[in-house]
Amino acid sequence: MSHAGLVEDMDALVRALQDSIVGGLEGADGGARFGSDAWERPGGGGGVARVLADGAVFEKAGVNVSRVEGALSPALQAKMPGEGPEFAAVGLSLVLHPRSPMVPTAHANVRLLVRGEKAWFGGGADLTPNYLFEEDARHFHRTWKAVCDRYDPAWHPRFKEACDAYFFLRHRAEHRGVGGIFFEDLGGDPRRELAFVSEVGRAFLPAYLPIVERRRALPWGERERAWQEIRRGRYVEFNLLYDRGTVFGLETGGRTESILMSLPPRVRWAYDHRPEPGSEEARLLDAVRHPRNWL
Amino acid sequence: MSHAGLVEDMDALVRALQDSIVGGLEGADGGARFGSDAWERPGGGGGVARVLADGAVFEKAGVNVSRVEGALSPALQAKMPGEGPEFAAVGLSLVLHPRSPMVPTAHANVRLLVRGEKAWFGGGADLTPNYLFEEDARHFHRTWKAVCDRYDPAWHPRFKEACDAYFFLRHRAEHRGVGGIFFEDLGGDPRRELAFVSEVGRAFLPAYLPIVERRRALPWGERERAWQEIRRGRYVEFNLLYDRGTVFGLETGGRTESILMSLPPRVRWAYDHRPEPGSEEARLLDAVRHPRNWL
Image (cartoon, rainbow over all chains, first blue to last red; front, side, top):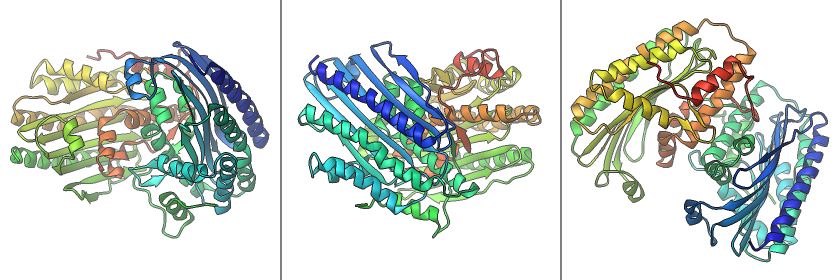
């Protein structure tokens, strides 16, 4: 396989990122620790799932890395770009479900896919608040713009738009949250792109933790908790109906528990729930229905 | 369209079934009443969603009817059997999520699809317990066997097996519950099949309510509730990942709230949850992993 060195370097990168992100999140949580589950894939490869449950800040948090190598089935060969059966995929994926409804849910991932002569990097980060704090959305988007601009000023607007387009629940006409960045198949110099996804990974904590610090002590009660759990239902709907990583991962025999660690810990579905017009809940709904330029 | 009379008669049937099933469930619940939401589909047709929330027995229950008529898009024409763009679909679908973890979740539906000269009936009923009571599974399966046997002794074994095959979560290697019956495209005399689905609809309450009566007063606590909510997570996974009615309905612009009324009211996802060997929870898991002949 070509790009063997690139795969090794990406593997080392995601493992280092996993350690530093887990450390940063444990520090922010101040209480609970992440467990560590190493697993192997029968067809080749494996991963490490690091999951925290019932923390002071995080009700459930997962930071997973995986590296999968082997031969694609003929059905998957037909579906995927590139040539030949041999492939490798290396990635890090994290999903954080805070306990407080005032602290937004966050997701980020970086990945490298290699098939034959071709190597694609992809990834992104997006923020899913239950209550809208405009300064949080601005801070999150500005962080990603700064990272992108160091590589190509055309990237941030493109990746921001791709994020809004990807995290969209057609059946609700709602986006998953207030967006972020999303990129696939950058298609340039692989070494430069490895550097870029490394910076994306390192920028996650500075993009997210200041928001956690600002919101973690805000008061909330049963009303906010109910709304949070209803919004988490949308998160589940997106991940199981639309998310390619989830659906593709489960279809191709990925490790179910690692893939579904993204699902929130406690969720509600209420029939035809509609927030009161003019309420904070209605304001959030308006924000996820109409993506904005947060810069 | 041919079969116009059949469509009318199925429409009358599902409305009558909706009334009688709602009445029977309200009687069993003893407290809450079903609301009623009539809706119209822009392309033609509509339905009535009847949903109960926070009852004494049922935490969430939905009994919906819909009738959709119109022209299929070229993409859907290619996917579906039959000829021509014109189609009609009439159906009833119900999902009951009891409050007590000791009372099983239940689902049933009947439907008629007409396209050109062709008319297909389909439907079924299945039981999803959180704790295994063998006599409940036997009673449920025996009721359906009796209904099927009045039409064709070959039907019950076929429909029972089809039910086990359909309600299967590949990524968990688990069936949704202890099964029941599932049938599609009976392919015989439409009038006789209309009579059959009518009997299926009328047999639902006698198949299910005796189970409710036996289990509703059993004691339960936090442990059983947690297990119920985890099992409900599997229900969500099945409906959003695999259920054709749900996925197809959302894709074709069906009414989201009616389709997703099937989702349980309160749900949990716990990372890599495994019941203690030898526990009642492990017994249930064994039953959903290995379908049995309950007769």
